[in-house]
Image (cartoon, rainbow, N blue to C red; front, side):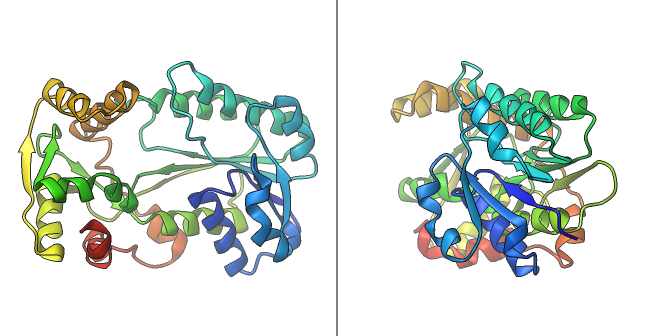
Length: 293
């Protein structure tokens, strides 16, 4: 097989890990192209023989020439979460450029249940998936669940105060390791199925905030009380901590998504693609105890 695989967002955590796992699976460096709007950050890939190109999702015309010659393009969703629709425009630019460039397959990183999820950014994913489907090209959609690593953004401050404020009402979330999701994506890209396929990549179990807090207490030996709030109370608490309003809206929508059950989805897709059970959240928290404290 000699198909060229173009990885966008290659300077990010997920994109870089996908390339790492492609190489680990024996995919020849000549088949891999790494794209980033900051290609200067990819010197380490250039030194390893991977071709590097500038890929700016705000530059629709530039993307066409960037994608020329690629057989598969993995569009890693951007981190642009402003309310002006920029993220969706970026994604559509990438999809349209892939079509014009003659790409044979489009891959995309989405989220579970994008059409029904209360997450504030879920419509970006649902509409991007729709745009990809409308191209008529074979596609690989990876609906990535919540990363283990997401907990590192809030748990250290919760441990510092001893209180974990939540509006999840005991709802559960299925966490999985970001690196293992990248490994699963690489496995599918390296040996894609015929036609189109959607994989929902999740952990093997869904846990409530109370259950996770118990794991954190056991791993760190520190007190952590779960404080249940309404959405309005949580929004007020976050605003009082000087969290920007756009992030407040996003974080409250995460709690709503948990209550809806859309973050509790558990599938065997991750295990199937990587060929083994994924790392448990308990193991991740144990390994990350020093970072949490």
